[in-house]
Image 1 (spheres, rainbow, N blue to C red):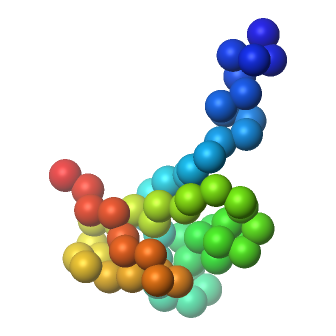
Image 2 (tube, helix red, strand yellow; image 1 turned 90 degrees about the vertical axis):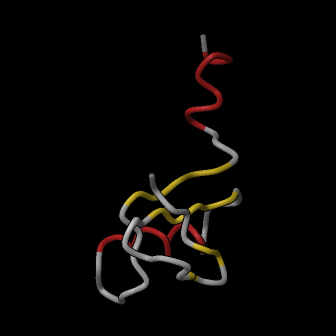
Length: 63
């Protein structure tokens, strides 16, 4: 059973929906914490941030 759940508990990448490049917003804090501790790829997602970047990573467009 653990083998089936391995991808959930040990992901290679994460998407953060509603990520923000504005300090003190929760989406910014989550991306910052992941970027400074998670070993995999972090995809910040925000439909409002057209072409924006967070820590050098382009925001992933939605829709």
